[in-house]
Length: 120
Image 1 (tube, rainbow, N blue to C red):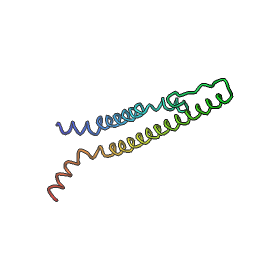
Image 2: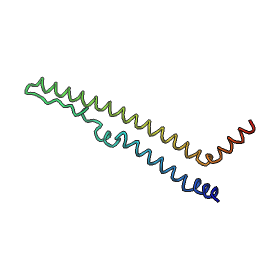
Image 3: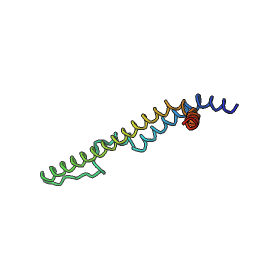
Image 4: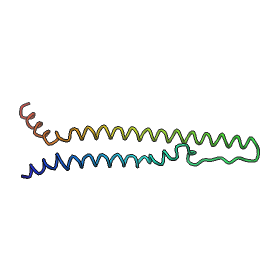
């Protein structure tokens, strides 16, 4: 009776629960990398380092160049973090899909191992 209840759960609610856990894990990765904040501030200066122009034209040009460099550095760093988030999400999706595809076979694997151990 317990074995039938387990199999009913495994191939029903348990499978759906595994898919829900994968969905939650993907959302956590997005939050861990702060993807929405990175996208919103993609072109912001790095660490809010901003130069303010002085009175002369040379000071204005130097401040503009400093701010441009700061924005470029911020863009590159945020882009690499977004790429790392994308790779992490892709790996989780692939491993999660593999896990969900192997889910129906997992209860049978101990029996296969036992039979293989006895025969081999």
